[in-house]
Each structure stands twice: as C-alpha cells, then as structure tokens.
Length: 236
Image 1 (cartoon, rainbow, N blue to C red):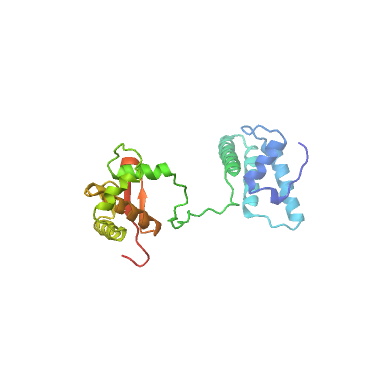
Image 2: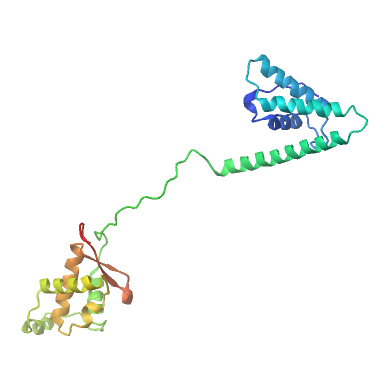
C-alpha cells in the first residue's frame, strides 16, 4: 500500500482514521487486510508521538485491538479473528453512516444563527388607511339597515332640523355604557334600537369620534362588523 500520513487534527477518533485509510487505499471494508492496515495505522500514531502531540487513549486502544486481531490470524483456529473483524466492520459501517448523516445536517442547519421566540409588539391603534367617500356612505347605509336610498340632499336634512337635537357627546356616553356591559358588540346593534334619524346620525358620529380617540375599534366587514372597547393604561 502507498505510504501516507495524516495529522491528528483531521480525525475525530480511531474509526475516522481507519475509514480514511480504507478509502485512501481503496480497500474492501467487508474484507479488511488487518496486517497492511495496522502498518499504516501504527505509522500514523508514531508520527503523532514524534511531533509531541498528545495521543488520545482511544487511538492506542484501537492499535492494541488491531495487533490482537493480527495475532489471531496466526492461530490454526481463526473463529475469534473472524468474529472480531466482523465486529470492527460493523462499527466502521455504523460510524460511516453517522458521519454521512452529520454532513447532510450540516448542509441544512447552521449554528451561526441565533433563534429566539418572536417578540410581541404593541398593536398599532392609529388607522393609517384611506377612507373613500363611498365607503362612509355605505357605512351610513349599514347603520340604517342597508336601505337602498339615494344620496341625501340639502332638502332632506330639513326634516332632521325640525326634530329634537341629539348631541354627539350624549351618544358617546351611550355607546360607552353599552360597551362597558359588553366589550364586544355587533355594529348593527348600536343602531337597531334608534328609531330617530337624529339619534342614528349622532351615534355614527360618536362612533367615529371614539375610534379617533382610540377608545373603540371596529373589526370585521359587512354583517360581521363588531365594535370593541379598548382599555386605556391603568384600567382593569
């Protein structure tokens, strides 16, 4: 066999060294020539000692094991030799499989990353979208039961002016009272009990003001819309 040498830093143990020697010399792992393999193995150990490197005890233990297997080959009955060679081959095959699996894992995973649980950021309460005029109109229709009525004209408001005046502040109090009892409320329920158009308009404006002041939030869409009460800091 070709004479070769290795540095200790290239191997993780005696099995790693044996596999390298077998691969380098293109030997059959199922029929290892122990005598030839032992010569190169001992040459490697000797070079380690000459370079004043600390030889791990497992390397010396494997050397003694190979010497013992070689001595058994000189006996007439070689059953024990075959058993020990079979055991060594099994260890080499198992180690090779583990090494190949480790290479596959190394390609998929890396320890150069730091993984931590996702941080919980405070929810953004400010609405940053753009509301079209038609969307506001549709919301007004939804508050009035989604009746298909034309866009109100100036004359249409004359009837409202003749009715009693409903302040927006009073509807703010009314909406908050209902939400204190039930923190999540269907959007329609804020208007179903209001028969007066003035109350509905005031309630709608009150809801817009509460959203602007971050006291409530509207979630969902269409018939699934809900109004949710937002607690301020310090509130239980």
